[in-house]
Image (cartoon, rainbow, N blue to C red; front, side, top):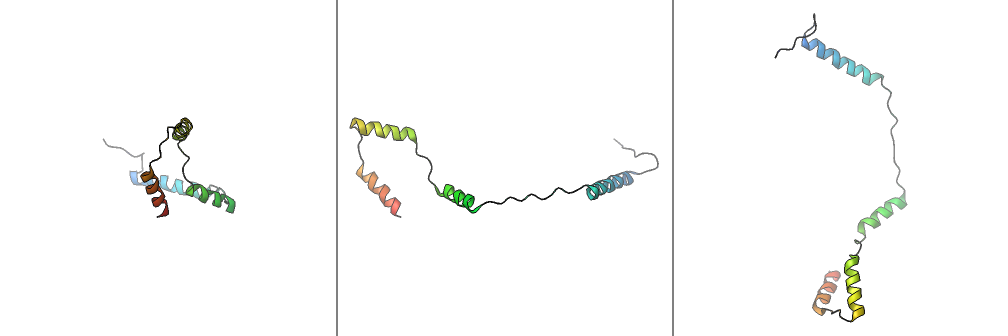
Length: 90
């Protein structure tokens, strides 16, 4: 398919005119003021604390353990407890 330019102009001239129009619009358009955000020291500290905080416990698991303890059926696995304690120290 062949595209013909308007009478008296070639395709390069049409493209150049559009390019110049875009430049003129950019130069004449007012610039929006720059927005700056200030984060307080407290906000930075809270963000750091949140990043280092452990995840919320699984409440369903907590409820199951609580029920087992209250029913007297909770069994402690001493080996698993010792391994978890040693892992915390390292």
